[in-house]
Length: 591
Image 1: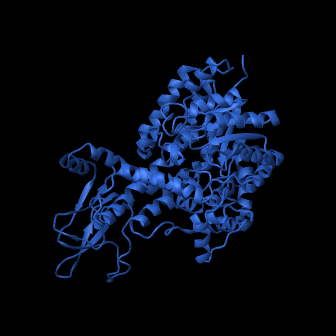
Image 2: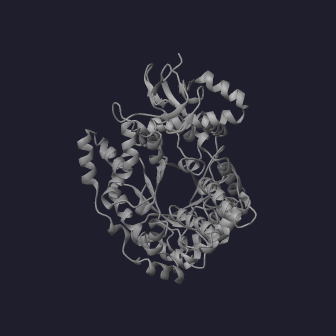
Image 3: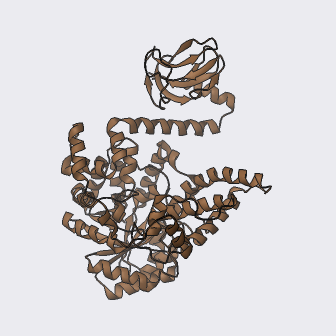
């Protein structure tokens, strides 16, 4: 029999690659014992990039969720791991050193055993400090090689990075095939090179299903010495996510590897429970396209997890581009036409910006440059006209060293705009920030929390944490969820049925007279309205919802019906309404 292969369930990334949010604490507590009962997982991914941020956006405390999810796995000896974006830690932009160091102390205390550290540029300078902090915090540093295909990303290129990371103290190496475009034979050779030189180093393979190469890649890396394979479970396997553990175990068992058995009763329970979470609320934020594999991803190399947001961006840009084409007497482009144009433009842009691996946040930057190019080309302005500081920051080296060479056209453009290239160690550009955040906690009367975990959340996600503490995040989330639920129901109803549904569910506030809508005044007798109230705002019976300025000049108060929660606004500030028009819907609390 061949060597023993272990498996990790990437429960966080299953959701991350499917939609916007993660399960709540109570849901994670329910699923953890079932995952344990499956009996086939040596590891489970319990938190990391985006996990904590979206918890805050949902009005939930991420520290409570991480502790609760890790605890049962800690008790039975299943190792937990998290994803760390190196210089960006758990967010999309750089994090000061003192905040990154605190993260490891906090996460170790919360029960996370392993940190998977990656850098979107494979710049070891952005990874090596985290190795030290992970060890100091009592965690195992696993360092990732971001896999992509280019003339720059050779076996020797990756082996050189692995050498540097292992010399700096990395105890494990992850082959992070974030777009699933890694060629199986190449991945097998790379695995063998690392194992031959460092037989004691654990190698874990993480490959998304995306374009369909992942099963072949799994077989190749296992044949060449890999130790652990990341997998998923239904109903969130395959598509843009990860292969299902059942198929992976079946394939490897047939090849003679020693693999664990699956408790299928527990698998079916976990499957049903995950579907329950989707049906309850998480599914409203999942793009159906992320459940579909696509070989088109091979050409552009974009990670499947960003396809949902990319299609939304493309849809918005399509209208603008088609308006330009219409004025120029050209045929309009369909979404498929535009998608192919975007993929082709990514292939054009990518080598010219130095072949950055297409992973967060650099995949977004390259896609955005390509998308803007499509518009400016249609406008006759050429390429690289609309690029923000983040895109330029990548090109100039402010996020780390670009693997390839920047095109002379961009070098000259930077010079014309007074921009300077740098080879500085990116993390040294940031100043420590914890003292300021500690002061803010004290001024607000907020507790720093167990092991300073609340201080860490504020420092890592300042805007989201403040909204969470104020309660605004929960209100916004519930309003968004209700809107999506209503939209889903409305898609299956006729206009008459939808109107009846809304009236049964909420009170329609109608205009008592015709005139112009004004929302709240800034002071008695003044006509200076503030911004419109937010969806989810609560009203009591007798409260004023808004004002209508009648044609004869009088301001007429419009009461908020019987009170409740504002769930829809049908008349914008300053718009004209006729008597009887619906201004808004307010949902009553039904007994």
